[in-house]
Amino acid sequence: MDKMILVVDDEEDIRYALEMYLSQLGYKVLKAATGEEAISLFRVFNPCIVLTDIKMPGMDGIELLQKIKREDPETEVIMITGHGDMTLAINSIRNDAIDFLTKPINDEALEIALKRAHDRLELRRELKECKEKLAKYI
Image 1 (spheres, rainbow, N blue to C red):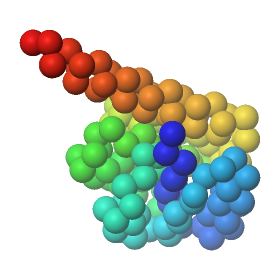
Image 2 (spheres, rainbow, N blue to C red):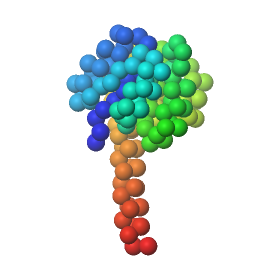
Image 3 (tube, one colour):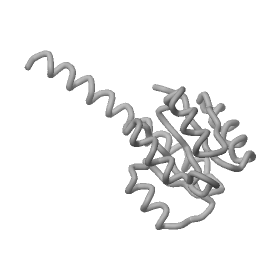
């Protein structure tokens, strides 16, 4: 299981708190303050999971989600926001985010979202292996 995660939030306190918590869970944490910085880090490190705020100056989280999914559709993206807006949640899910969390982030909700992301990544890996095995017999 890949334990690298990219955390994107324009608030330094949020990035720091998430880094501390995720590090305790065994993640190597990359941090970005903007969508543009996040794309640069994503292209270099290609983390399997991205945790991003939606409301940020410049490139917002929805645009970041769309760019990440275009570059690597298998990356799992968890959206976070301080605004419990159902329209944002629906738009996130419509753009293939794995989950949507509101600030302040509940630890249990975050762990459930991370488990869901890892389960989906594992399922894709197993499916790929099965396809490769099947291809040998065809």
